[in-house]
Length: 334
Image (cartoon, rainbow, N blue to C red; front, side, top):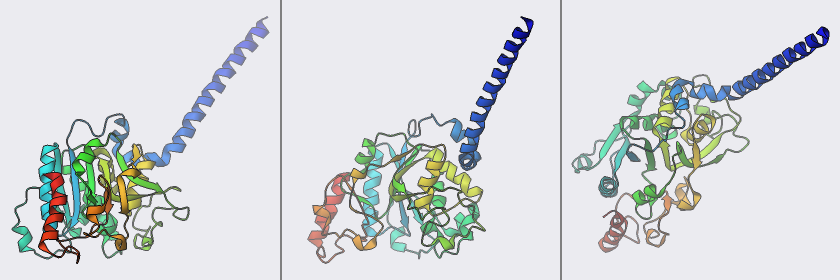
């Protein structure tokens, strides 16, 4: 009887050990599975701990237009209208301007600005982000936008809508922003990159300008490519990019932004494809002309829009046509 009791006890003991080993194995496998994600997020552990905290509640949102050099006459009119609309919609409006290659423009400086402008140069950013200097590309800031975007952390906002200067909404963009119901850390149109684009340091035709010897590539077999013309990023995800920059992780932002979001402890959602018209592309030969604009569908985003003055095209080369187009676009923000 004693022998059977000992056998039962031993079996229970073995069962406990087996169960414990099984649980330990699961934990270990999960740790191994997440190890590459942990590397990406280890520089900002609070981001992972606060994952359940809403990204867009409790603070004002910022609407940010990214430009190069001083604003054109047309942009001055647009930015004034945007600033006026932002004040009514409880948003912060900011112009983020790359002044690296700009000549002095007295006329632009004399324009009375009613909006906040953050200006920067390559030399200024490369002090904070030394990895910018590691590239042989002639214009690194054209390829890598995230170093400039981290300057927005000075603005006390929980979310930032990033709009390229040549992206234009056929309507009131602030009304569009107000209709978006999401607390995701990233809202962007993006997709999985082609199979040949394996490593984020080798997935662009200018990849040779981002050498692996000086920049730390993201070690992943899956990469994503996004459209940066219009997207929204949370403050905590933007802070994560700031931390990645400090440890030498920097790549082409059209791949960098969605890939880091997907591979880290952040929430990433697709920006509805039904809110973009045609064109919504990087291809410059598809740019919208002023003569096309009045007939385009309302409440959609279009890119690229390359006008610099009202009445720039031959069809709108007279004062009446230019005034009509100006009234049509700015009227949405009156």
